[in-house]
Image (cartoon, rainbow, N blue to C red; front, side, top):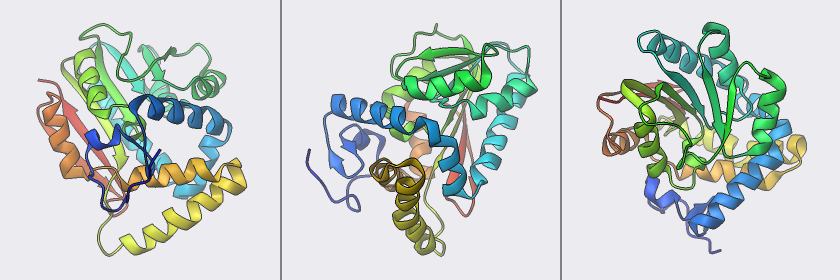
Length: 256
């Protein structure tokens, strides 16, 4: 592995294929490193999210769930919670749509184990990479993808795969970190570069994992660039809603 300058590296989905934080890796190495990382942090993942975001991520995910429920009520088909991890987002959707088939798909068996303890048999589970989902063409009404795209081996391929499994008229609801407003960036930089890794060491016992997560956020495209990536994957209209001065953004993309 080599270590490029993460501040000057290109911020595109394509560039992420060869990165693991600030290191340059092969796609196979990236896949292995990311999966192993999430397997290790799974037991404390929800607690760390609460601490890192001061609980704000829960409100952001409620916004995703509300949007998903509204979209699902207009179109029959499965709801796929892609990179669904510990099942916190799926839990919200199960409560709102108890009769609907919801599938949590994730490449990390450790994360899915936490989801199974939380949700039992109320949802289905698929352990598979987002770039190769064992799901039928045009079978899903809604795909939610919350803070997971930047961790995929080939994010562009993952978006194309989401487009494949969605029905015409179906929605991808993509929540990801984005670029904070200029006035807020200095404070956010201090929090992300110093506080989050320290919390990772104290609470999860893994400073390196949370150093990677911070670096992956810094290398991720901004909301406007991500909108263009969605158009490139075949999606039509894209609406963007920003949260906490631009720290996070919800992209609502429709398959025409």
